[in-house]
Length: 193
Image (tube, rainbow, N blue to C red):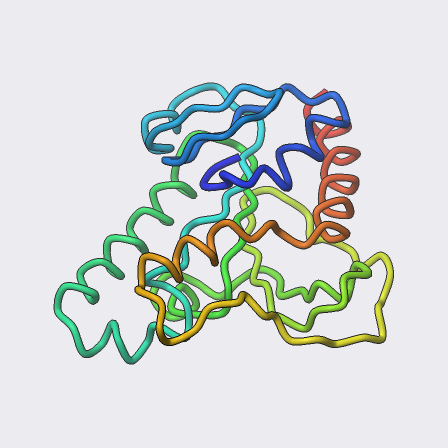
């Protein structure tokens, strides 16, 4: 697992008996192996599968105006796109990556799939883009008729650092996490053998 300090997906894979390694710049208290460091230092290791939550700081749709009006943010966006390409060009044979709708569609490639948390029973309507390398699409499991917007409890009086910390500490949708891991664990067990 890359860039997932909250451990939502990693914990689900761990529960299913997979040998999980997570990597993030932030520490994590977990029962699986966690590397507090740069994921790019691990890309050459012999992993069967990588699920990545690449940071959307310079890639999200909400950043478009900011990125295009600031040379530093524009360079950071180009670096982020280059890092995503580096992940997908690594020797890891199977990769799934999550990111919101944003600049990757224009600067890298369109997502392989767009899903919503309500496809899996969570009551939210946020679009979630998924990019794959040798991975199947995710199948909806339980449509929830509720379509709530996401509230991340930030406000304009907070610093950008405070907003980022709150947004990054939010755990990925629990029912969607379970569905992703259930489907991918079954597929991985067949594909790796």
